[in-house]
Image 1: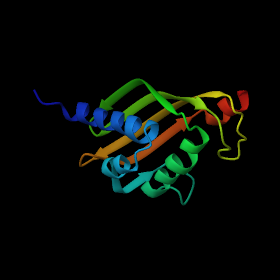
Image 2: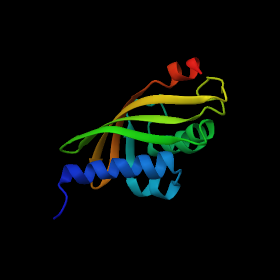
Image 3: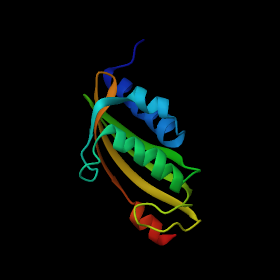
Image 4: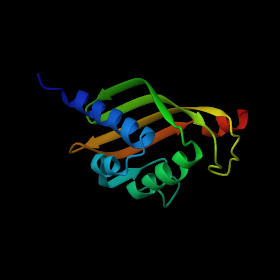
Length: 136
């Protein structure tokens, strides 16, 4: 039995979280993310896929080197996948102007991805990083 389009899209987002964010695999990033990717919630000038890759590999995974991603919920409709998850790990290096604490951190995240032609094409996201960092 083959997977529905929504199930395939959810699996793509699960792979992105496991292989790219938690696993740090650059090859998977380029396999899963469209060349014309747009991040709608990124700062001006940082909305491309390469900017997202820089953030994940050179900032986030440096700040939280033992990063674990825990997926709580995923909903899919058509080409859109919404995920609620938690990033956990040790806040070991400064990130986004927030000083490292050396303590465990738990960041709540909600993402919405648009999938086109089997790749992640667009993203919107919210997270509690600033609040979580201040509590550490």
